[in-house]
Amino acid sequence: MARLRRSPRPATPAVGRIAFNMHPLEHAWGGGNWWLAQTVRHLRSTGYDVRFDLDGAADCIVVVDPRVGGNVGFGADEIGAYRERHPEVRCLHRINECDLRKGTNEIDALLARMNRVADRTVFISDWLRDYHAKRWFDPSRPHSVIHNGADPAIFHPVGSEQLEPGGTMRLVTHHWSDNPMKGFDVYQEVDRLIAAGELPGVELWVIGRWPGACDWKAARTFPPATGPELGALLRRGHVYLTASRWEPGGMHHVEGAQCGLPVLYHEDGGGIVEMASRYGIGYRDDVAGAIGAMRERYGELRERVLEQAPSGDAMCAAYRKLIQGLLV
Image (cartoon, rainbow, N blue to C red; front, side, top):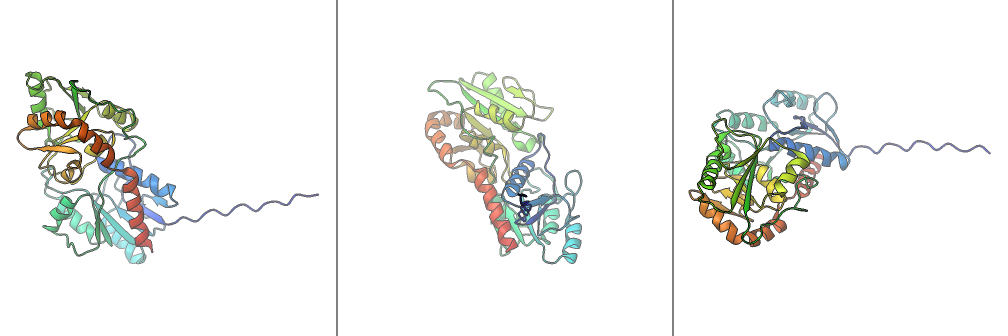
């Protein structure tokens, strides 16, 4: 008796077709790249078709960076032309930059121009939204604030080291950028204090890149790291140290917190303060005093960071919900 052939199962249609204007890179880069990589993975795993150009059909365009070139494939002009041909397409603009944080003078204007084609805007901190609202953004326009979260498969506290009473407290920081605004003046001051014996029982680990003028005296330094290698290094620390100024949001302190490290943060840290203040200690002129306070409060703040650390899962779900809302 002949067997009936089963008809091939029809492919499940994509929930939506998303075009990002930036392509993720697979090596050490800035925090925006890692936000993009994990968001793309999440959208694909939940049924969305993702591309990085405007050559095919798109239901939603997601703007990551207004500066065309390199891994940024298209900008405001291309989006405007595409929307003239396809007026039904929606546009989500994620803003994670400003001129203040790097001492530049063109980013704010580029963001303002790009934002004209957006249906909804996402800022990565309340601080960044308020910064741009004072300059060009109309806060009555549709917008959201979604704080950064890191990939939980890489940045997690399982296996992280804990500071024992009376033990050496290991401070760790990491940056892909070597811009001085990342806080290298403070990191060098901590390094000097350790070398001079003024911070007994404290170590400093510096991962990534730093200005050529930095002359480390006691710090243990590591080249740029990413992925599981970086997560493993962070989990060997006890406390995360950030001195970045006027940071829109940042990913470095998020990765540290998700690895179970309470955070020492500069009070001029911009968007960093919104998150790190939940499980950390701020400082301005007396980083040594803050380090001492961290030793005294370590147990309490370790519990807080384990309970309140940022979540990459929650962040990705929030972006997916926004995109879904635009499509319906």
